[in-house]
Length: 435
Ligand SMILES: Nc1ncnc2c1ncn2[C@@H]1O[C@H](COP(=O)(O)OP(=O)(O)OP(=O)(O)O)[C@@H](O)[C@H]1O
Figure 1: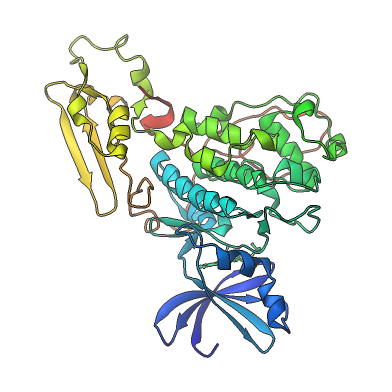
Figure 2: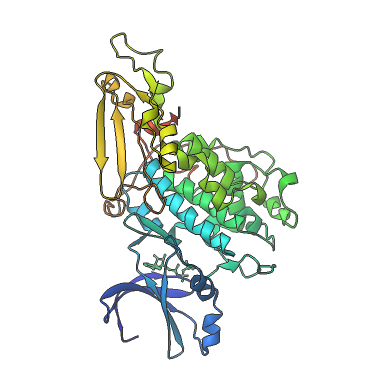
C-alpha cells in the first residue's frame, strides 16, 4: 500500500472506511476502502460478495473495482474515485433537480441495475449514499450486500438501510428477489424530487407505518405468502388511506408519479423490472407543456396570437432515435414570431422553442425541450450537475398535513415528506401534460 498516499477520509461505513488517495505511481486519484475485519487467507477475500460481484460486473454505471490488496491481514479495495454521493448532492443543493436531471440520473442507475440483474446479482442496499456521482455520470457502489439471484434463500443476514427497505424484507420474508432493488429505486426517485426521504421510519415498525401512511394499507390478498403480517399488529392500520402522491411530490409530472407508484407497490410482482422501468413513459418525455396551457384558449386574451399546430414530417430524421424524437415533437407551433433558442453544449443538446405569443406571462411560455441521447443512450443533463452545490443551504417550504392513523404514537417520529416542509417549486412545470 506504499503506492497510495491517503488524502482524506471519505466515509466510514459498516464494513470499512473509505479514503481518497493518490496512486503515487500513476498520479491517479482513487478511493481506497479498508475493510474493518482482518483477512488471514486470500480465499476469504475472494469469497467476499463485494469481490465476487464486482469482479464480474463491468458497466459504465457500476463503480469500477481496480485492484484488491491484502497486506498484514488487512484488505484494501481500490476503486475508481467518484466526487460525490447522491445524498451529499441532495443535501447541498440549493434548488430542486429539474425533471430532466432526475430522468438522466435515474436512467443511468436503472441501466446499471438492469445490467446487474441481467447478470444474476441484486444489490440489496440501494440508497442515495451508495450512488456515486462525478460530473454527469452516476454509478452504483457498495456491493457488500450484493447477492446472486440464484443464491438460495433464506436470506437471514440482511441489514439494509431501513428507509429504502422493501415491505417484504420488513415483513421478514426469507425469500426475496431483485424487486427489492426496484422498491429502493422508487423511494430514491421520490426523494430526488423532494430531497426528503419518502418513508423515513425510525424503527422497523415505524417504517411499515410510514409506508402505510403514503400507500395506504395493503390489499392482504396481494401480499406474497410467507410474510410476517403480525408486524402490522403494532398499529391500527384499518383507517390508513393512501395519499395522493402528487400532493406530496408536487413537482413531479404525472409520468413520474406513475413510475413511483409502480415501483413502490406492496406486491413485489407488480413492480416493474429495471428493464421495464426504462421503458416507462417517464423516460420518453420529449415535450413539456406547462399547466396553464392545458386549457389555454379559454382564458386567452383577444390580442394573443394563436399558435397553429402543424405536423412537419421533414422534421423526422432517418435514425431510429430521430424517429422517436420526431414523433414526440411532431406538434410544433407555427406562429410567425416564433423564437428558436438552441442551447448546445459539449454533452447536451436542448432546443427550446419559445412561443413569444405567450411570453407576456412568464408562466405561459411554451417550451419544447428536446432531449437528445448521448452515446451511452442517456439523456444528457446539464454539465453543472455537480458543480453548483452550495454547502449547507436549506430549502424551506410549506407543510402538507396528512391524516395520521389512530392508535399509533407519532410524537417521536422523524419528520418526513408528510409532516415536514416540501420543496417549493415555483417553476411553471409543477403540473404538465403531453400532447
Ligand atoms: N469509489 C468511491 N469514490 C468516492 N467515494 C466513495 C467511493 N466508494 C465509497 N465512497 C464513499 O464512502 C462511503 C462509504 O462507502 P461504502 O458504502 O462502500 O462503505 P460501507 O462500509 O460498505 O458502507 P455501508 O455502511 O453503507 O455499507 C460512501 O457513501 C461514499 O460517500
